[in-house]
Amino acid sequence: MSPWDKYSITELPEIAASLLRETKDYPNVWLFRGEMGAGKTTLIKEICHQLGVAQSVQSPTFSLVNEYVDGKGKPVYHFDLYRLKNAQEAFDIGLEEYLDSGHLCLVEWPEQAEEFWTFEHLELNVSHVDDAHRKLEVVWRRY
Image (cartoon, rainbow, N blue to C red; front, side, top):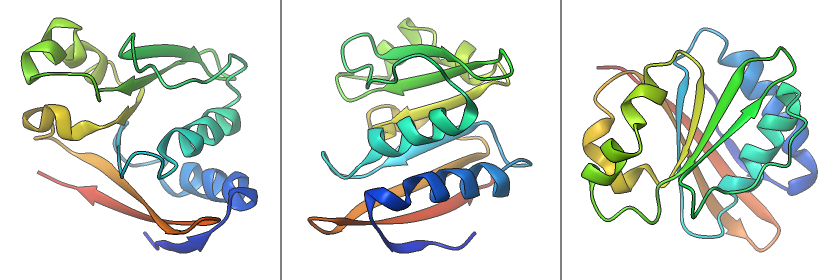
């Protein structure tokens, strides 16, 4: 999958639509990596918009997981693992059941539960280029 070396927020609808088109046959677990403020949540909001999610998409920083419904009535799970202290907390919220559900799971801060990611998944690495631009690299991790 080609990286987006430099994009602005106005290009996010095109990028999200392209991601969804290109990843139809890919795993349902997407890990979003990047520094604080890199644009992970903003990208997830646009992906959800493209999927037809009508609810407000917000980072689930305190609840750890938000459930949305896409335009086809299917659940989309959005995780923010930033506040986890250890992988046991991920087990405690039932992360494994969500990941095994077959529904799209969008995970911010996967570094907080690194031992979970031993199966096929997509990694979306978002980074700053400058104040107005970001870079996105997508990697399919196969195990």
